[in-house]
Image 1 (cartoon, one colour):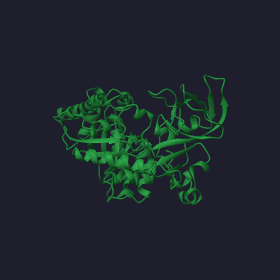
Image 2 (spheres, one colour; image 1 turned 45 degrees about the vertical axis):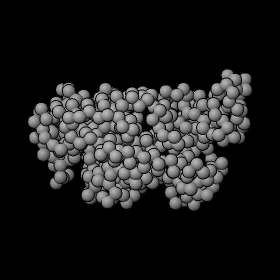
Image 3 (tube, one colour; image 1 turned 90 degrees about the horizontal axis):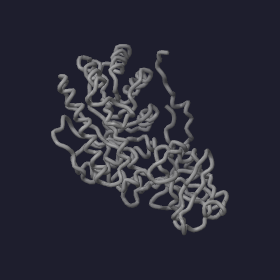
Image 4 (cartoon, one colour; image 1 turned 60 degrees about the horizontal axis):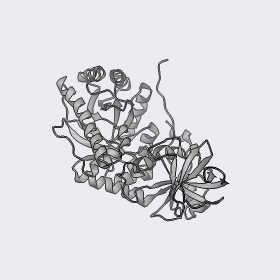
Length: 412
């Protein structure tokens, strides 16, 4: 069935009203909050952004911030303040959210929609470009047929400027992208070669496999592999007769951390190197397992309440209201679904989850947790944990009172 243009009017998403939430919750102790609840330490978030920006700037590289982890105007502004002039969004509500938040060309240069473009979103993207003015809205492609759809949409919509595109390159993760040396890449590049409706802005790769890194050296190897991947795709474009001042965009939070810490980049590049990352602003257990997260860099926890105890099970287990719909079911190198970081309760983990139930399991010697106590849990994956919640409670510098409430953009 062929697709037609699709839209999600932002006013129909009916997000909670941030001003009303602030009036209700700012100043309250987090112990008074209904659980489960996302708690973000704004000072840690801000410092994560500042450190990443400063280090990447010191390397003489561009930095592109992915906003899909938190999906909020407040978090986006902190990423921009940390030095990001370009953004990546995973959904159209994020793109529109940035534009509606008053973030303008004085703040950023462009926004990239990271999912390879589909025909039903082209009119929406064109409307976003008209709203964006001097902020460039860029698209992702990884198949020649997408170029045909972009060309047809440009004619239908009367676009005066060509669509600005990143070509997604698959470096072995098998998620999205065309391998740099493949029939699919060749067909895509040939489709771009004589098509006035599109222009290649750069080549983009995401090495999700870098999450397997356990130290700087391993992450550095993935980082070098990412660069070789996009550089090879650019080399193939040159071989096929294409020319351009291309951006070579690489990154996942582990490789971005490695680059910021001085991992070597290969030379002989066919473009300008750009680093992108998203989870770096919050971090989580997946990132912590790489050993590259700074001290104090875990900015997100999920607050949960203990509702029952089972001393007869496995040396003693407790039940919380933090289930899969509060932290997701993503797993990582750390066993279980999260780690308790509340002072005095070290040694407890979120060992099992079902929809609304979460069972805390303990290491030998861990202190007892009582019914009605609250605990804070660092999840495996911050991006999906955030997506489970309607709003986020903000604390500052390790404090125990709410100083702000952030409402994320929702929907597709």
